[in-house]
Image (cartoon, rainbow, N blue to C red; front, side, top):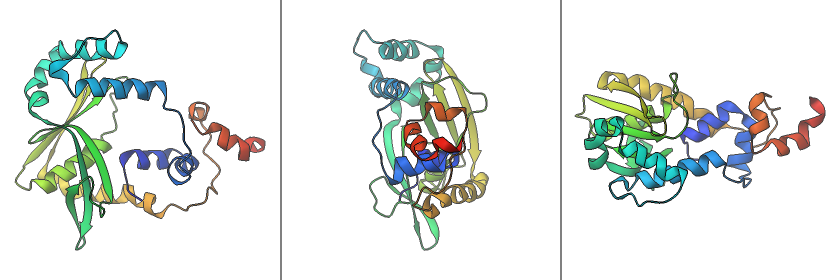
Length: 223
């Protein structure tokens, strides 16, 4: 089992959903929102040479390219490594940065834009004042480990559809706590029981879950 931010968030959200998605690996159709996000990300990967097309996703990408937000980050966007695959493994009891493909990796992720001391992730959803930064914090751990001379790293979510940003700066002295939180959060992924014994935590989100029908087969009579 390899830890990812998506897996940790899924397990925290619902253990049965985690089981269906990552243990049973039941295939599900990609949601409309995910398809939209993937298409926009694909266009932004080649933002210097956007090819015109009559789609909502192209309009979002073009509007972002013409925005003040793009101008603010233009130098970083145009000169950063894109879709960088990363990994973290443990050697001699210490976290070590590695490539995405490393078989010993305990964590893997892909960074939309990786600069010298900057990490950027594109978002196509709604702007969130209380944005969860876990994803970019883990990427920052990798970058601090990869480049020990860095004193600080700026992590940013750029909401390309709504032309807003949410950013934080982490300093080298924050690394110890970042690592502590990282290890605590990924541990349940590796200790998860492989049988779906837990009754799901029923919330309003269940109506929108891709695995609702699977849960209903077992628990319809319980609610």
